[in-house]
Length: 122
Image 1 (spheres, rainbow, N blue to C red):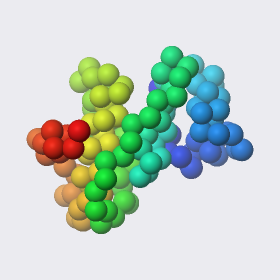
Image 2 (cartoon, rainbow, N blue to C red; image 1 turned 90 degrees about the vertical axis):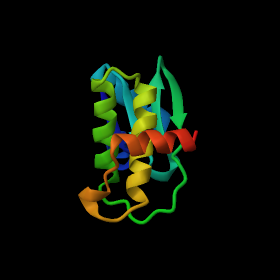
Image 3 (tube, one colour; image 1 turned 90 degrees about the horizontal axis):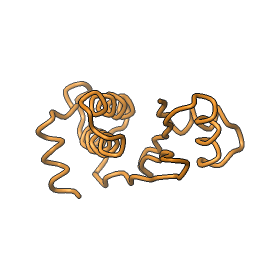
């Protein structure tokens, strides 16, 4: 299972569309693949079809570290038995909250904050 940043995916499949690059990556690793696209959201392949989860709209203060927050929360969601789609949603919410704050590590949202954000932004 791989979830790429957009620059990493583009580097691994130069000149290919996002969908073709994801199919290429899926063939290489023989598993689930996705890509985070910053404010454009997240795309992944599900049974060969391209899926998309849009990013939440927030007033952005900073983005440094947002990918780390996304990947960490995504992995946590999977480890807790959530579906990949639910894990993407939860991770997107966490990364959005993080981007709306300053403070580095202190800006990483707690579980309750993520859940409240999702209740108010679905």
